[in-house]
Length: 151
Image 1: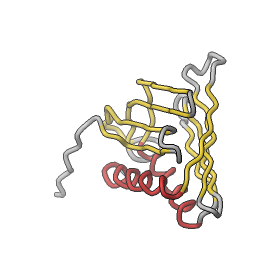
Image 2: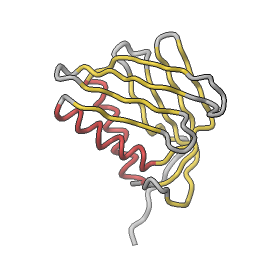
Image 3: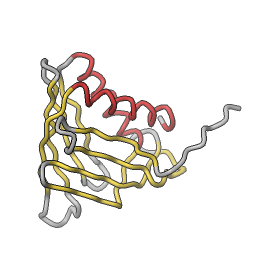
Image 4: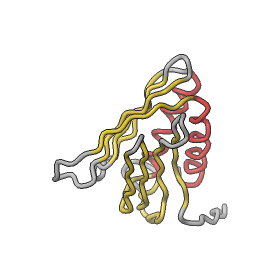
């Protein structure tokens, strides 16, 4: 029987940085649930941090699945390899986070997104920042690690 690797939590699961070094989206896994997810992989609870210009979000009750991260990895890898296309992340549980990375042939990419803390209240943060292929490679590496650990 194959032995499962030891996973130390919290685990930085995902990060996408902007060209300026200040802009970012980061997801940290604090708790992995034993059951499988409807989206593949495993459900988790963690933290979400967004920095875009002078706007900041630190959300400590973020739920998602490793399957959603793997799905984003697939489309992000395609954008990186072909220097074109879109990679979308959409939180289907509580609709907290939705963003799209659109890659251009020059290697530049624009991230457009929205964060919504409480779905029944009208307050939303719309954000946008620029990144490029050099920043995306680290994101792909981190997501591959999550895919390998959890599928």
